[in-house]
Length: 487
Ligand SMILES: Nc1ncnc2c1ncn2[C@@H]1O[C@H](COP(=O)(O)OP(=O)(O)OP(=O)(O)O)[C@@H](O)[C@H]1O
Ligand SMILES: [Mg+2]
Picture 1 (cartoon, helix red, strand yellow):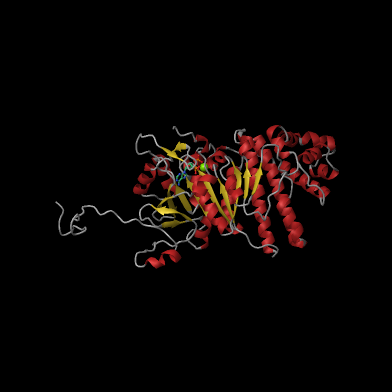
Picture 2 (spheres, helix red, strand yellow):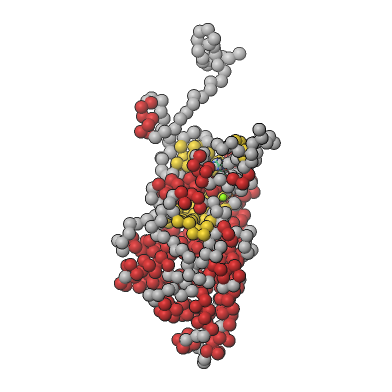
């Protein structure tokens, strides 16, 4: 029996008390659209700062979030976001939403090393540049690239400083690549000889075609007097014997699948005026870890050099100041490559991004990917990313992973239980959905698009990301599972 004092409902014939009042349908809209509906509209308590990423599961209000806007408005201490979650629960889709929203505000997305590729179609749709690597296309690691071009345009003392930075970057990259091949560090004297050789080559090639790795190998085979003197040896013969280790490593870099990428002039340089850049490295996905490490390292270096060049041009008043969003997806691939110096490089990236005008989104499965490294120092540094990422977003994760995460960012038991439940289907019933073209496909798992957005120590915002048809069309990593519907 319903208590008549609290019973509500229509009076009259057919009316009566309702035990459960169904909530009225709610709609979202901009204040410009809904102001005419007074007094039925209500505002969200959270500021609408950032890209609208979804709907708050608890309150139904719109959730806005992206690392750059939250940083610019003082909500986050650095413009970096770490996205964690089990496979296929919508980490990349959530990132695509932020890319699209930020691109609309003029932020340039840079996907430096797209392994699947997840982002090529999105960047193409934005009118951006797609550079494919690994199928015969080349990347010349000694090419001063965007930095060299910026240095030429700026000229004078500042231009010289930039040329020098481009040179240092090339040296750093070559030495790291040798380290990846050797799985060991170069000796200090070897490193300074590589630096000297690269400098000699730069002076020789100034104004002409940039030097490349075969030129560097050639200079180690027949060294000029300057290099012989720098090595503190008597003659060319002794030089060749002493530096055989470096020469062998250079040779290894120019052979096999890496040789195809590193032995020629850069096929396509990053364009600084492109509305977005995606370096698609999917052809190397199934190659050895060394190859992946070497190519990822080079694309990161190339990308960050382009950002420095854009910043230098803006400082010189030659170009407007641009902001970038760097997306590093499938980070677990890079994390697994031990002793390759990738962790160090990433460590540097996350420390620098504020001053470079770059926002970062790192995506990986769980913190365990980072802790599985055999080097304790690497594991510590990798953990540091999570600590420094102001915004941590988790899609469905296993309880163990959540406990590990809560040691870095405090999470309540309730939050952990909720996120863990997103990775479990509600029942055993088979679920398929029909697409707009009449095909059948597996329904997204129940946790798809559910993310918990944590900022510092605050309670997380449970958000449901709802993809638009355009987003589905641009980024459908399940496209291969489409099947004809039975008639
Ligand atoms: N918010 C969402 N609503 C409905 N379906 C979604 C949503 N987000 C993702 N999906 C579906 O799940 C699939 C996988 O999404 P996505 O590639 O973003 O996951 P992921 O977590 O990046 O996966 P991986 O770990 O394999 O990289 C997409 O193709 C899409 O069909
Ligand atoms: Mg993904």
